[in-house]
Length: 462
Image 1 (tube, helix red, strand yellow):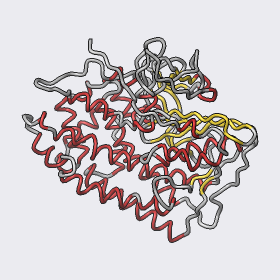
Image 2: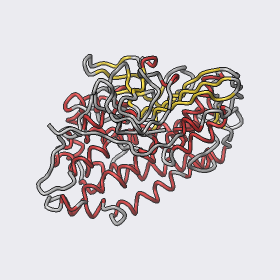
Image 3: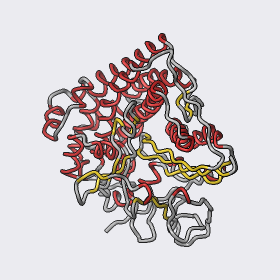
Image 4: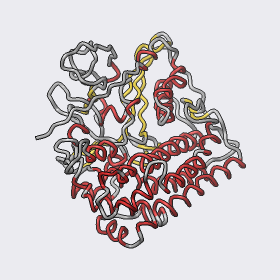
């Protein structure tokens, strides 16, 4: 049996940087963890401070928070699909396949026809970020009690125009169909019928589905089949509710259960970290680099939920939320390369109409912000769904200064090393026995598996 070890080679030190800072500094410092998912880090920090202050954003503020987070997440999904995942099918290793010429023409990095279309569409969509947040990445607009910039009537129209323009691009180029038609695909048979109902050149999602069928990507990269989501996009007027539900899917019971947040632990056994005799909850976690550990091979800690490895991301969100197509695909072949990509593109179809609704529900002239006063001594947690999955910030404040700040990013979960019981992380499991094509020196299957998780390595080890 071929095994795998996944190393995170970059140490960042953000958790140590935060010690001794005033709580509000988290809003300026933690977004610098990443230039791709900085809004996700901002929202998690804002939610952690809001948890300590006991405040909730007013409806306008929550709509704007959701819009900013959705804009970043969807732009990430789109960028990943077109600029990272699909160019692998244009590689020379596939030159002998009958479909290669069309894939190379469409998806070759930089030179393919898709790159010329996706980049202007993505840039136009990111105008929403400029209108709501002033700039991206590292906007300071997100606050514990909402957002510090309101939206007037003209900006509301501008925002809706931006999102509807993005909708038209998705429907014409990615799907070759309406978002509603894609969102309501509810079975494997419906997906296969939809795949065959149009010319692959009429939609890049169909193009992917044909390639996935040819290469049997549904048999590649299966991991734990245990999926977790913190819940995506808080809903106004329903405390604790999200657009995509919160929970953990357990394969042994075939059901969603409440997340036992108190049973999250970070195992340091295979990490270049010291100071922890036993795995600790992140609220009590430590970040003490120790590069001398003989058994260690990664800067990443090993997060575990009640001692179990979980997978997080778009596939996890849709499994927990109960989308019938995703449930059917996973029931047939588990979590795999094909299903992770399908779930990611499905979210584009599901979230854009919700963005239109959030914009319509903004009420210019009403409050966008609730003042927040953080106690001198408090603890809080900020939990959010980034594009890649579940992101958590745990903060402890003593005498008005941060005593401890711990972060578990989505890639920390998915790319974790082995724990003290020898259990491999999700990607390490997914890479076991990855097939090798004849004549390959670097297996393309490994590329597909790794990219199917959409890793963000700079977010992994803080």
